[in-house]
Amino acid sequence: MASLDRVKVLVLGDSGVGKSSLVHLLCQNQVLGNPSWTVGCSVDVRVQDYKEGTPEEKTYYIELWDVGGSVGIASSVKSTRAVFYNSVNGIMLVHDLTNKKSSQNLYRWSLEALNKDSSPTGVIVSNGSDYDREQFAENPVPLLLIGTKFDQIPETKRNEVLTRTAFLSEDFNAEEINLDCTNPRYLAAGTSNAVKLSRFFDKVIEKRYFTRDPSQMTGFTDRKRFNFKSLHYD
Image 1: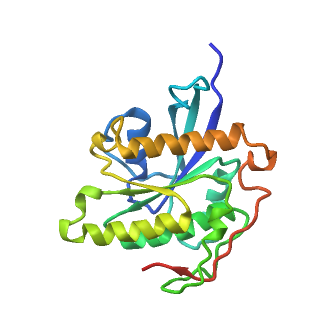
Image 2 (image 1 turned 90 degrees about the horizontal axis):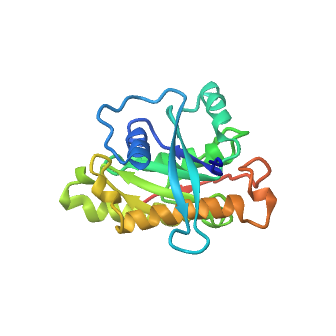
Image 3 (image 1 turned 30 degrees about the horizontal axis):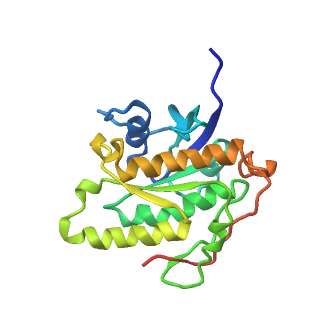
């Protein structure tokens, strides 16, 4: 049996947001019973049927790279993580819906990955209006925003939280999925979350194997650098 083509997707976010639980659910279709802290990087594989149900259908491997570590500014930590940022085809940005700081830090995580050869210093999260969404609109690497611990949001605050995540989704020019990693029904076949997830993986495969621009097939190495002076976050 011939080996399958594969793509590499980073899974980024603060420690404790549930990245390992998410990856286990996506790859094993099971709830992770005793999640532990990820040291360095953990890789798991998911099978994706590209353009399922069409004449172009083909099966691929999706490598999900769960990158551990805090968003701290220590250069040694960033240098260690930088080795995982090579030849990336897609990024999942994961945040805890009950932890606003983890949502704010997604800006820093994305900058660190997109500017893997530099330190994303001087990034300010504020209510300013000079954040340029077009920089992400021009980004050829597909992004997906995933909010975890949806079940833990108090009913009285749910609208507020979902409004905030909608702003994040708009900023990153990415679709959003909100779920509870301890409940597989959030990703059940036919749900809007499952459709968005499949659409994201298909887009990653499309960019990697069917783009006309070879420079967009090898990750971030020769791409435009991202630098934001101010990031609004209401």
